[in-house]
Length: 121
Image 1 (cartoon, rainbow, N blue to C red):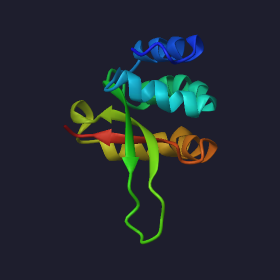
Image 2: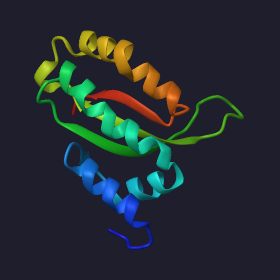
Image 3: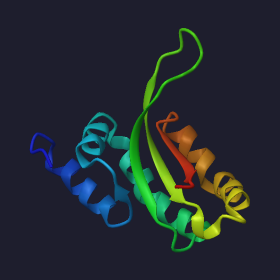
C-alpha cells in the first residue's frame, strides 16, 4: 500500500480488511483520505450485515457511479457488497430488512457515499 496516506488511514484500511475483502486497498485509502468521517460507519456496518447475512463474505469496492441523467455529476461511491449466493432464495428479503434497520440510514448519514448492495457473482 502507498505510504502517502496518514497512519490513521492505513490503520483503518487494515482494520477493515479483517471484516471485508478489499478489491483495491490504494483506492480505498484514497477514498477514506477524502472522506474520513465514513470510517466508523464502515466498521459499524459489520454487525448489521452479519445479523442478516450470517457468514456471507463482504467486500469494499470503490466505484465511479456515473449518473445516467444529463448534466448530473458522476460520484465516486464506496460499495459494501454482500455475497448473496449462500442466501440467494431470501437475499432480497434480507436486504430489505438490512436497509430498514441500517442501510438506508447509512446511505443518508454518509451523503450517499456508502451503499450496501448484493453481489451475485
